[in-house]
Amino acid sequence: MDNLPKVLVACPTYEGMSYCLEKFIEKIKSLTYRNYEILIVDNSKTEDYYNKLKLIKDLKVLRNKQKETNPREKIVNSRNKILEYAKSSSYDFILMMDQDVIPPVTIIEDLLSCNKEIVSGLYFNYFSTSGKTKLLPVAWASLTPEEFEEIKKQVKFPPAIKSHEDIRRHLTQEEIESNKVVEVIIPSAGCMLLSKEVFQTVGYELLNLKELGFQDPTVTTTDDIGFIINAHKKGFKSYVYTKVKCDHLISQKYVQDKEGNFIYEGLLKKD
Image 1 (cartoon, rainbow, N blue to C red):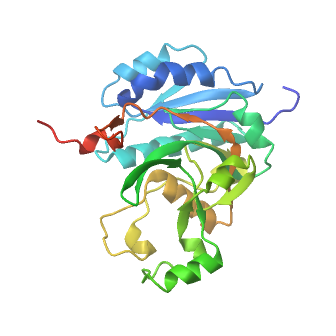
Image 2: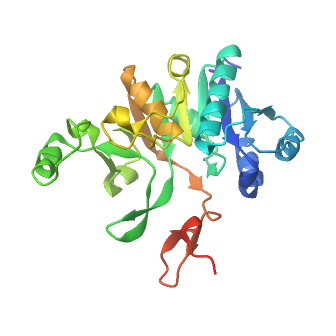
Image 3: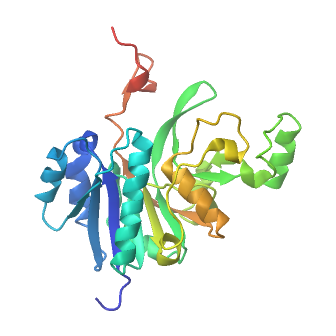
């Protein structure tokens, strides 16, 4: 198609994401780019959701038959299944998605225009900070050297933190509104464009935080953090194009308390 790069739009899923399936598929099938295909990898316990997905037209569906009990391991295997599929099918890029992230229809063209090996759009989630729950970008940049030196005077960092590049912060409002390409430590991984050079050499895994200088050997990174750490080790940089703002369908995960704060529903006390 006019020699356009071939793009695979892909995401892992499971039956718990059915609440946003219709809106996700509607938007993904409406993307304006002319040379892309869609792949979904299902992690569900049964094949019911997988069979439902297979009925959707123009959708390639794979079943992750791994029997892991750890949800993070299931996602890692599904992400890696996507990478292997892209490598075997001669794709030039992967747009790695989460099913609850709804992108603008021009996301592929917009991210390709950045000419970066790893670049994402931007979406938001609720985070607890300074005793309050705030809607903040799911992307983190590093501190400046000056900020790092100032904080180091007040805080004793673990051994893994050696420079300003090891400390992350949410993007500032100025960065969010800049509509520019911003270098980050961690991009918004649920709408992330990966070049062939990246997905042919970097895989998803759960990195043990003890290897990064932390004490608890049972705690691991999430799949996206593990992937980005591995990519940085191989010399790739990561970016966010803040012009590309996506909706994040998190209404199924958060509820408002009497004061109007958003609280993760898993933390609510059951009567």
